[in-house]
View (tube, rainbow over the protein chains, first blue to last red):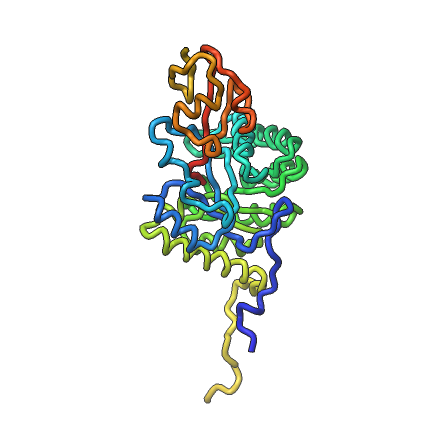
Length: 265
Length: 66
């Protein structure tokens, strides 16, 4: 007998020539402690794990690197350029990250506004072009704007990462139509990054047909991050499965599920 | 001799190489990436670069982030 899970026909996610089994990617920021982070990453089943580039603490350097707690042989480290507000800064951070020697992937962020942390798409495109030229596999964090997504793909980005809603907001997928449109029009993988708050957000996002989802705060700031990581793992799988299964059409009127014939007089 | 490391003024021995600076700070060269006056210096080249008065050195690594 075939189980429901075995009937899901899916292909692994490939980005920039690398293949990943999990469509859920997770961040490493804002956890209450490192032990919780390690257990949450494990529970999420994620292979791609994001990290940020920062100055070493000259006094307590031995405690602060996240690499003391993550095994780069088991997970794929994806460095970000979080906190960069100009193309030049983002390029500088990306180069430093690559020099750490793990891979040539970068999650490119060029932030345009401190209050909303929305991307500066002009700076993003500028930085993406330079980094692609330098051989980086660029995963570009962007708005849910089709034209920018197309330009990023034209620039040679390995993946485009439209937001669900602002970073750390937990507002969920605000614009399913735009995200779906981006997925339909692009050839490179589309990974929704930022804004999911709970499992239903992840599920709904994956139901749009996108290739993957990246989240940090939704897990790290949950009351029980390890349990939420598990929920997100299941929701990502469920949303993907539902997308592949193909949902029924929406109707404005009811259709009975039980036969209308054979009713008693 | 005074240099600026991660934005802080630090005294280092005159004639010190970048590798010497790391060892003075008790940092493992395999665990940090070094930028010297805005130019990345590869691990293998750290002993070849001598620091000068007023140089700006950035020492970075990976921390938790999203």
